[in-house]
Length: 134
Image (cartoon, rainbow, N blue to C red; front, side, top):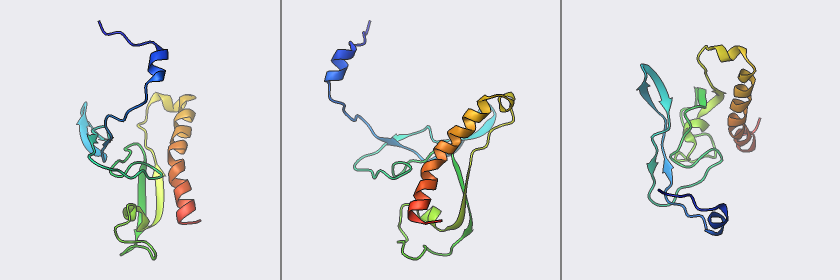
């Protein structure tokens, strides 16, 4: 039987990064429903840049960002290969999270989920404020 070492022994070991995994969300069919998920992460070989919202090559499926009014080219001052060029080309952005209509929507749990969404969207709002302006 494998035993978990005591906390004291765990605390004395230096942490090691064994694998860094990323994925972009994709649509899958699960229990008859099509869902968007980023769960199928794959290991990355070599350095990966850490961005405000995530690692390069990694995206969240829970947060939907919809752009509108697309520019024909990169905004002035931004290179065409900017890591966020797909978002920077939009004239406006909307972030949302859609939940299925279920009983929990009429309970106090709804407030917790909405607040959780606001917390998830906060880095996007902060990045836009810092880098694009109001």
